[in-house]
Amino acid sequence: MIGPGTGVRVYIACGVTDMRKGIVGLATLAQDVLRQKPTGGAVFAFRGRRGDRLKLLYWDGQGFCLYYKVLERGRFPWPAATEGAANLGAVGNVVGRDRLASPELGGSARTRRVNYPA
Image 1: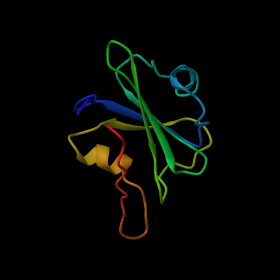
Image 2: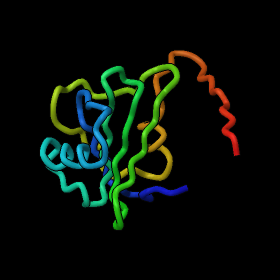
Image 3: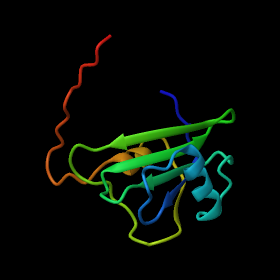
Image 4: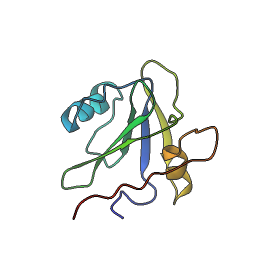
């Protein structure tokens, strides 16, 4: 798995983010709104208006990595503030990451397998 490793700081952009933004737009939000250096090695999390879309932005030392997830059902739990950042601090092994990426589904989660042509 490619990822930032353990002990990385995670900043959640409170409120909603325009999911049409790409790497440059999200890096600008991290710098101007969250007041953090986007190339500092932290992970920046952004959620869309409906709550079913999540983007994670990370600088790996060579360039930006952008992770985009869309839920089929449910929503990601998120702080309701209109502006600013919530700092999760240093995320440990799997616990912090799973908590960030786990949706509130209100029942058992069903996954659908998608077969892509080779």
